[in-house]
Image (tube, rainbow, N blue to C red; front, side, top):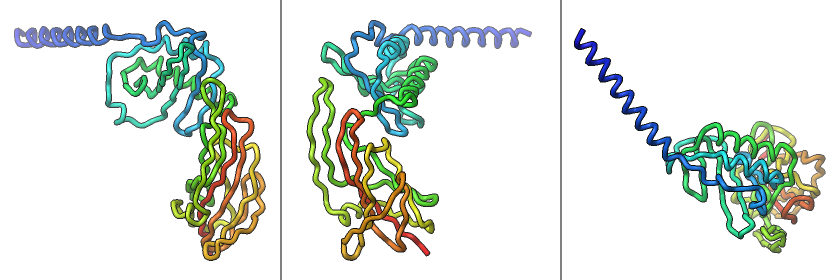
Length: 269
């Protein structure tokens, strides 16, 4: 009977110590954005990864409220051991300061430093970021978006060729960028080959362009090109190994311009 009593007392003592430790840990909680108001935010963009798409945040009142509700409990660099979706908010404040806040439940990463965060508040922030994308908010493109070619059950990223771009700045102005690139055959050397038995392929952009030009097939031996008709990003494939080129233009996004892409597809028979 005495032995059982001692075990019970020890268990109570251990529980008390654990509770005290948790209370001390919780006592260190802070709210880094507790004084942030919507009028403090001059500009806000959100990037959701995946699918690695950026959009402009118009509802800064909601964003400020969610950030004020985030409580963190100390630095924790173990976030790189986790997998999942990251929702990144880039803020430009009216006083000129900038801040980067990533919701990666159960972590909040502020300007590169990770903290444990209340799961509910962190999840609410991530959900809001996804809802901005789903609402059709204007996409933000600092440079041409990604492109994948898909045929059958296989896909591969295209190589970005030359482009001309008006890159947006926080003050509302833009920076004009012109980037040259190697020719189609040289650029396509950096692409993974799609091996397919299908006779067609599909283009998938991160942000669909306002104008999609014709697809060109480049003969890998001669380098000569010929137009391939495409409809809604779908186009037919020639037999054998071929390099394909496509041009596209964005005019309605925040950040506009045109770009060319290259990819390789080997149609098997």
